[in-house]
Image 1 (tube, rainbow over the protein chains, first blue to last red):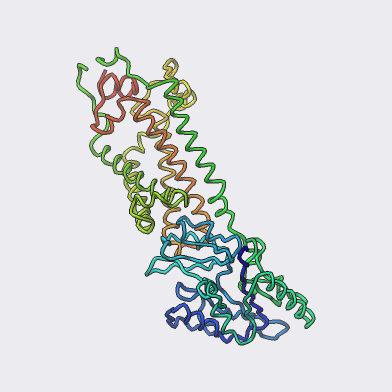
Image 2 (spheres, chains in turn yellow, red):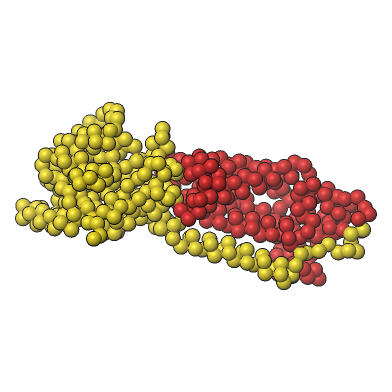
Length: 266
Length: 204
């Protein structure tokens, strides 16, 4: 039986910004937390770090003079077609598990950082001390043991749900319909079709403007990365082979360019 | 050989050439290891993936420096003149060892000059894009997206050029390897391959 693709649904309309998921992530993954900058927001820190894989973004939003936060859970999206994996040169450093989780194996990571460039969501972070790249593992260790990810386990509002992707797609559609009934005409699901679908999905109130949540509008593996890891390889192979064969044929047909004997004593 | 051999390349020229050749080979093979998971086994030959990731950029930097020394020394002699244009137009004759109609060449023929400019240009862009790839956490994303494409393209062009260079210097033109190792060529060699240069240095 093929493994079920697992997924995480983030219903941003239900997030209250309690950050319990951030704490749970830090605790389960045994990460040190150092207080960073304070820049007049409720957001824990501006960005992900090598030891902080799950950041609730408090995107400030004004609608008809009413201030609100558009919460977004900034983390690895566990793409079906992962740009990080496409870019990675080290076998086994990035693995895509049968259940859809994209996991980084630091033992095999060489710290080149190509995955950072390949990721359409700008998620992997290179540690300056260990020279390895880190990101959310979707708690593959917990999931492998039949548990739910730490963030899911701790979420108090059902904003976060974990389960089979098929089930969660249905749930996302139900929640979208409910939000539309509540007057959020633009509600919708965000699941990155451009990268083959993401296994971290969002329900957004403003689905036509994901940028407001800090999410890319149409996430895709950058074309330069696709070209680099695709056709360019074969063009280069053909060029090398052509040069080697050309040199061989040239030698067989024309041989070396000899020095004339009568010039030898010139 | 009855007459005194001629100095083709000075000691300094030979040192800078072989320094850049060594660095080039190191950067090329470690670069191939980082180019594709299928070639990653090459990383094992050079001390493992982390070592290769740490040292490939330095190999490249030293290559660029050594090439820079050669560039400064030779750039004046590498300008293409009118004879070179004729030579390039008739380079298919050169490839077939047909000498009738080929202009006499100076110290470097037009093919060597083209190789010089090809390697210099690709090394320049390899250095620029390499610096960007070296520090992914510092370089802006837009620069990295260009660099990851530019770097292997220039590397492939450069390595293709070196394959030709290697063939010419080992098999195709006997005597040229000795010229770059011990610096000396026979007068006959000089007259056959670089007639104009032969007359300049021998006074004949």
